[in-house]
Length: 127
Image 1 (cartoon, helix red, strand yellow):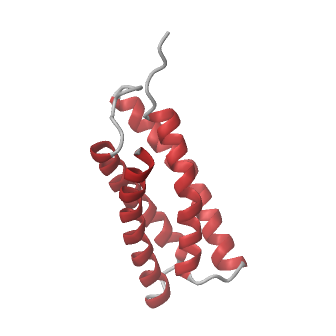
Image 2 (cartoon, helix red, strand yellow):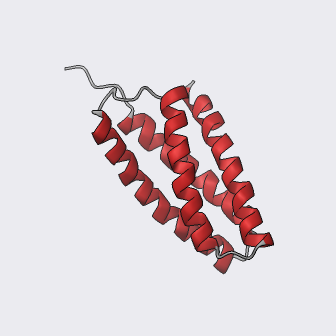
Image 3 (tube, helix red, strand yellow):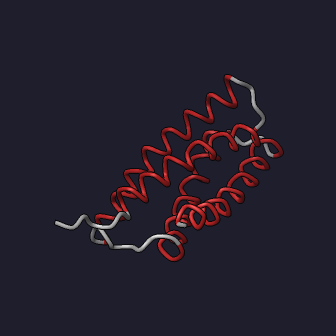
């Protein structure tokens, strides 16, 4: 199943992101907004590369440039959701960096998988 492959790829990237986020925010006191922003950009780039190697067939529905632009657009929306969820979990609900980031990752995993599997990398419909 693709979702299991996606979970392994995404889970590996998310685990690294979670560990680095927690250390930089809790141990080094770096602002969570910036850590989340840069971590998201790096993690998303790595996730895309790993997904087209191990999970989805690139170019199946859209040309490569269109596919990358769609991924960028989806990731921009996801980044906004991520920043809002981090703000809510850390600043309003007072979760630790670890738990705030864990909740954020869990929620956004399903959003990303659905958009990628059902739209960006979906097989073209037969006429």
